[in-house]
Image (tube, rainbow, N blue to C red; front, side, top):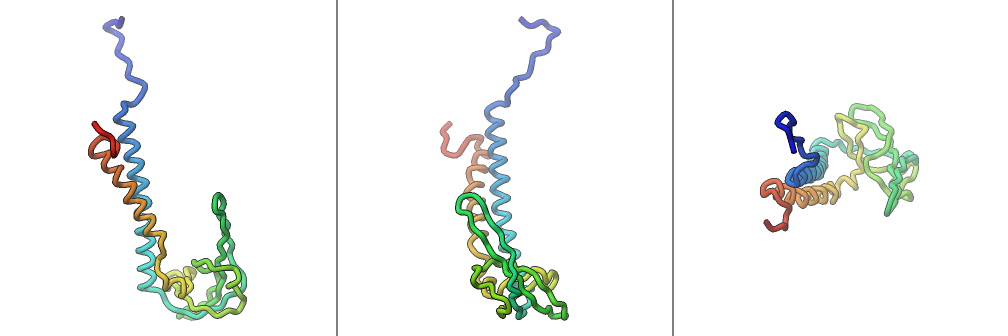
Length: 164
């Protein structure tokens, strides 16, 4: 029995509806990040295609090695190249594009594309010509697939596929 001076205690758990809202908001944020990352990759490729300056360079023989761990572990090799910019500066550094290790040979002449505002951002012309790749499209598709149930749950107040 409660006395008139004792206030009722608040429940210690969130109502079930709040959990669904929180989960749908988290799902929507993940969807927006995935789609935004894919869009950013495409926009960066298009920007680079519009402003990139062609140059001829040489591989130095050195490379940056990046290992990924977990299932399907792999190693990528980013060759160092040296080239001269249009304003005469000599740049030596790794490319943005990975290549197979046997292709990295000291003195090998390669065609490059570099960003004139940031000449350290250099791409191999042959890889750059292939386009932005599949990654931005996969991220965009994943974002869309995650956004559909998230928006549905926020608008209707229930999970996709649930009745009542």
